[in-house]
Image 1: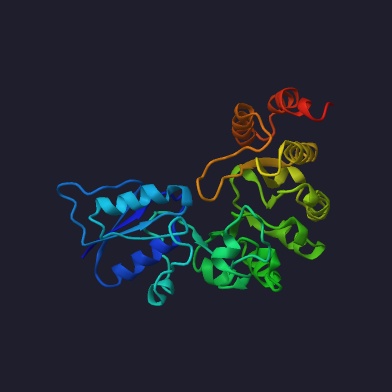
Image 2: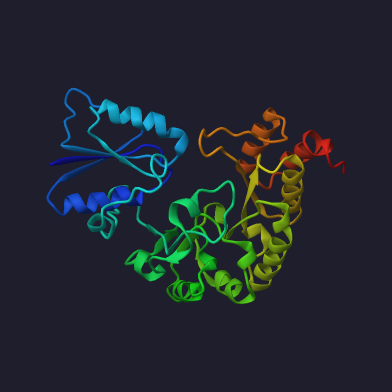
Length: 316
C-alpha cells in the first residue's frame, strides 16, 4: 500500500504522523510525508491518506482538504478533535525519525497540566498532569532531544529525569517552557548543568503570562543565576494581547530590565485564530510583536517601543 501522511499546519515534527509511519512501514507499506494543502493529482493515487491539523483556526481548511480526497482521508489533531487519539496499537509505536529527516528525539515526559489558564486548551485535551514516559526512554540512542511537556517541573519526580540528562549530557530543549513558579534551588542547579540546544544559544525557556507571576519569575531568575544561568541566557514567553496593554507593558519592561530574551506570544482566540490585541493599537501590536521576537536585545527596538507604546500608560 502507498500511504500519504499530510502535516497540514505543524511547525516541527509530528509525533502522531511519525508513529503512523512506523506502523505502516512495519507492514511493508510505502510512506510519503506531505505538507499543507496537498490535493490529489492525475497520478496521485495513494491507498490511504492521513491528515493532521493542530490549530482550530485551520479546521475548516483542513476539512475542505478531506473533501478533496473524496472524503476518504482520515483526519485528526487538536485542530479538529481534541479527544481523538491514535488506536492503542499505533500509539505505542516508536516514532519514525526518518520521516522528517531530523537527527533528534522528540516527545512528552508528561501530559496535561495542573493549571487552567483561560487561553490554553491543554487541561481540556490532556487532563490533569500525569507521567507518560521518561527522558531516557524518549531519547533512546539520540544525543539531542526536544521535550514538549506543558508543565514538566510540576512532576514530583522530575529530578530523576534532569539527573539522567545531566549525567549523559543530552542536548535538550523544553520547547513549551518551564513554570517559573516551580523553579527551586535544587532543580535550578540541575538545569544549569544540562546541555542546552535551545535556538539562539539560550538555555531555559520560562513564561510570564500575568503580572501576578512577576515575583515568581524574579525569584527564578535569582535561583538560576546563582546556579550559573544568567537572565541573558534565558528565553521568556510573554503572553500579550490578552490581559490588556497595562499588563503587557509592565511585563515586557520587567523582562527587558532583567536582560532576558523576550519572546512575545500573541494571544489567539482558540476558535477563530484571530488576535484581538486587547488594549493595543493593532499596528503597533503587530510591529513590536514581530520586532521583539526577531531582535529581543536590540536597544533601538526597545527605545522605539518606549516612545511609541509605553508612553501611553507609563511615562519614563
